[in-house]
Every structure is written in structure tokens, then in C-alpha cells.
Image (cartoon, rainbow, N blue to C red; front, side):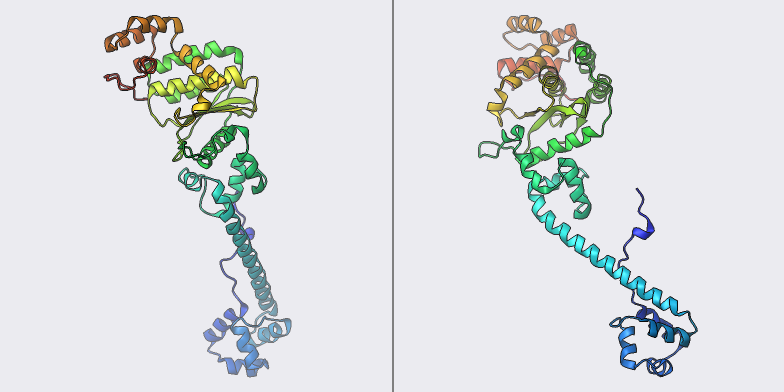
Length: 368
């Protein structure tokens, strides 16, 4: 919404005495001469000119007569000055209050991350309402309630974890905020198989995979939000419910087709297995080493299994894995072409099953 001129606050208030001084100088009239002409004591006239005394009705009338000007001009200048001064004082008071509030608030939000993402401007007057909007709170006293939420309580700071909880919650809230502004088709959980069948060739071809995945998910009523992760926050993805539709947030921090495909399917597992029955839940996919207990949870294991089996049929995989106790790149590529699944996904699965991620291969894993 455009700002109206009448709503603008002057940078400084101009006292009518300054204008009177300019007027006298332009006419070549000295202050002592003007004092004699108007009958205004020279000390009082000097105080008016220096802005130390206001322009009352009597002074406006006699000054107007002496200069052949309407007295209302000088009264209006005085009124404008007082109004501007009041606005400036109010603006300064609001600024001071905002700065004071911001000093307390910034300890609970990832300030630098939000600035880098263009969410915050550095102006506390505009940033304060933006933070409230992102965190879905009416007052900053409610921030403590946000951090006490069960989902986030799992990731309390400790010496064993490299997760910065403030950064994590900030990332989650930013993804949720962006998701709330998106509109997609209606969601139908019964179309699970159709969705998976439409995604598999996108992963296999790996050409504009992110854009095509987002378009496909949108068609099935699922929001996809790509948001870079902040520092000390090794998060890959999140699944949650967003204004009537399921949503997935990804960081793409690894930029690999195998990681992208697995994470998408992992979050879809949460959606179809868990979120359809509990729309209040959020499932955050973090670095395995950072959250060992969380990764061992029933929901995470189910989402992992859903992802693996959706990408590669478990019976076909088991047969291939049993027949290849040692890695052979040609066999991996042949198997992937047969299933029409990207070879990097097969390679990633093989490394996982062997618990050996140092296997050398010329297979390109880059997300394209």
C-alpha cells in the first residue's frame, strides 16, 4: 500500500522564526529596525527568530501588517511547526521503543540469517511486526511458548549436538511462513501411487528435477518450499500441514539427486503415513549424527522405509543386493536403467546397505 503524503513525517520541524529571518534579510530590514516598526521588544523578536519563542496571534497580526502579508500565514506556519514537532517526537519515541524491544527479541531469532534471506531490513519498526508474522505470535512473550513446543524440545542445545535451536526454529518458521502464502490444488491421499509414479521418471531423467518435482507436487495438492538452511543447522527437510494442504520444505544443502529424491520420498512418507491422521505434527529431517534418538523413532523409520521402497521395489533390490556382494558400476547402471531409476539413487542405496560411503564411482550425483 502506497504511503499518503499526509501520513509522512518531516525530517525536521521549521520554526516560523526561520522564515521571518529569511524574509527580513531578503528585504534588507534589520532586526532592531523591525522591532521599532512592530513594537515587539527586540529580545522577544530575537527569541522568535531563533525559535525559542512561538508566534502567537498578536505577533502574527503585527508582523503580517508590517510585511503586508496575511497574519494567517504566520499562524499556519506556527501550527505546522508544532504539528511536525509533535510527529517527530512521536516518531522518535516509537523508534526508541522499537530499538529497546529489538534488543530483547533478537536473542530469540536468527537475525543474521533472516537478513541474508531478505526477510528483515534492519529497521526494528518494520522488522518487529514481520517477526511476529513469521512466528505466528501477537506478543514476544509468546516466543517462549514457541520454543517449548514438543517438536522443537527434541532438539535442545547440548554439547553433543551441532544444531543451533534458534536457527532451526527460525528456518522452520520461515518455511511455514512461505508455505502459508502458496496456493496449490486440493490434496487427495488416495492418489499416493499416482504421485509416486509421476515422480520416479523426474528423478530418473534428472533435468530440472526441482522445478518439475514442485510442479508435480502442486498438481497433487502438496506445497514444496525450497529454503536454504542457516549455519549450525544441518537440516534437510520438513513436512507439515499448511492451510489445508500438506507441505514439504527442503534445503538442498547436498545438491545431489539421490539425496533430493530420498528426502522428497521421506517427507511424502510422513505425509501419507502420519500427517493425514495428525495435522498438528511437524517432522523435521536433520543430520543423522545430530539426532540419533530422533532418527530411531518409529515415525522416522517408517518414513525411511517408505522412501526406500518407493524409489526401488524392495524385492527387486534385495535380489540385486544379494547377487552383488561387491560393487560393480556397470551392474549398478544396468540395474538402474532396467528400473528407470537414476544410477546415483541405486549407488546411494548400495553405499547405505554396505555402510560404506567411500565407494568410488564415476556416476554423476549432481542435482540438475
